[in-house]
Length: 163
Image (tube, rainbow, N blue to C red; front, side, top):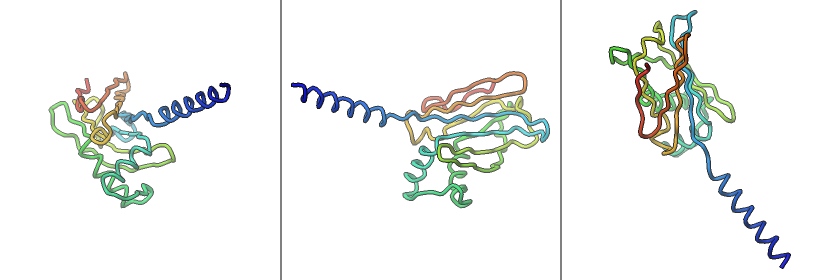
């Protein structure tokens, strides 16, 4: 009896640990702020590296090395149509790709809207990873130097006004 209780407890722990390890939270965050020195709005996205790696492997059937400029270009071509800013006049704001930094846990993407202050942003569109991971949630913090406004994006909410 004592042995079967231990076996049952061990099996329960094994099942519980499998369920916990199988559940992953899919999230991204972008900070948008004005750089007074350059006169530009800067965008810094941070995504979980394993989510970006899985996305690219799924789309192209191969492993990617984001230290390689050609593989960074593939990532750029994925992100740019899924993340955009509109001006207050509803016209698209030209976002320039600055680069990518990678570490074992995160992929950080840098963009900027040259010679444009944050207050000119009228709307934010963010579908990065949402088309791949159904439970992906993206948070965008808009910092105009006076206050920070936080926007949340998911599969059902791809665009929001900035104000």
